[in-house]
Image (cartoon, rainbow, N blue to C red; front, side):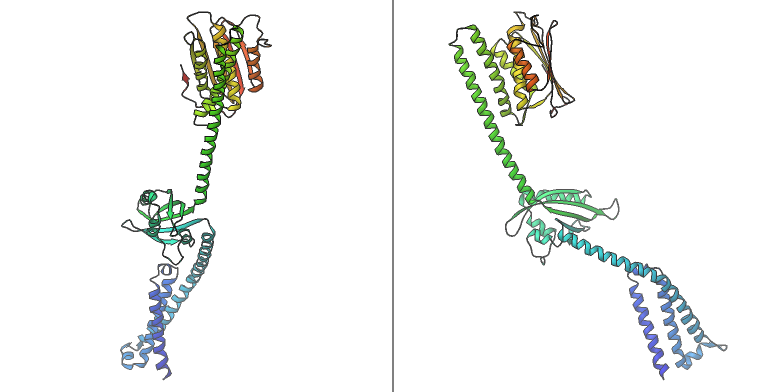
Length: 457
């Protein structure tokens, strides 16, 4: 009687286990484990053997499975069902247990990685997101970092998504977001800056960096992984810095403008003095002073008009200074040749350079030529290995033989030596064999100059 109850229950229990294992086989990860098929086959055979064992309680069925005295029900039950089933189960579990240990260890590692990722995303300054791209091109959010809701000014229980983020975009930045989506769908990495308007009316600047992912290299984009960084503080600081720079630039321009105007007033006073002075020697001194003042005023004028306030291009400055000096004397007498590359000098070097060049120009206009028609002046400026090199020459009758260029006694040459040696920290050499030539070199490491576009006249 006990066998009549126990054996059917055992068979039903084995059948239930078999069904449970069969349904579990739908999991690709489980079905791919080594030994799982052996376990499933062994369970099926044990179930078959259990049902064969029930035939003992049904004489007619049992007799029908007995042929020539051989009880096939017992053979199927004991050999095929129990023996083969147990062997298959043993083989299956021998292979399955190591695989299950590896799977369990992998699951633990994945859980640890998820916890670390969650911890990082909670404290990171970037707000991460993962979105899936549907076949119709629509973008569906898969995951947003928990702090993303705080960034957008929402509560964590509110649904987050691209649609909600798009609605918060500043109207002027919707086009840039549309370009970002086009880049993502085209499989291109993208970075853009945009503004959002939070529910409480705040405007926040965001920098978004995204990377598209594909299942195969030539396929469409299937996933978008990205990070959003709040750069509102950085943008606010940049705007404040730009305002401060604009104000400082305006103040510097006003300073240079006022200095230039004051120097022009001095020149005007000297012009008025010219009309009242009759002594030629005094007139010559006033003229020299006037050209020096004009050379300094020209530096401030160029700084006032230039885009940069820290330095001037001495190539452009030299051309303008020549025009000023020529206007005071006779510009038709001398044909200039300029071979000068852009070299930028700060104010503390531009003024002594301008005064030195003014001395050379005034000397040429006043003393180099005596009514000749072929009067030429050449000025070359270049920058090599941290040194500014200036070559100045004219084809006049040269310096008087008694002039000592190394130990000059004339006021003009003494001033030129002092400007080059003391203020520019350079060297000065002079040659008067035929043409008068002056060679000036002085150090200047921070020159900004182009390698092409040499200006020539």
